[in-house]
Image (cartoon, rainbow, N blue to C red; front, top):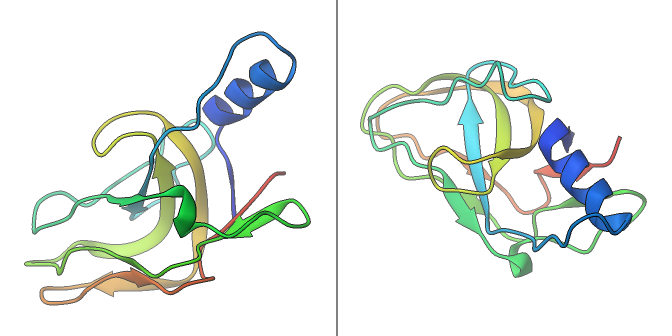
Length: 131
């Protein structure tokens, strides 16, 4: 289960209380070999070997219920051309590279990503909730 980052919590609160207008960004799914924490200080994304964040659209997410939502479609990463390490966490960003982390979470099972493996979140497997 994932939770919102400090950055996104502030943006949403400011929007709800009329401090700023906020337009939801395109959301990119990232992988990490360590806990990103709410401030993204622990993020450790794979580098090289065909790794890239995956862009999603609004239609790629189910409608929220009970304070959480999940992915409506499979999320497929590029096929690894070398090791990405042991993936333990995911993160959502507002950019394909760099950008602001929006949410993060821990995988239910760590996954070793070696050459020729395609990391995938099946529909319904990536859950985000407000905490």
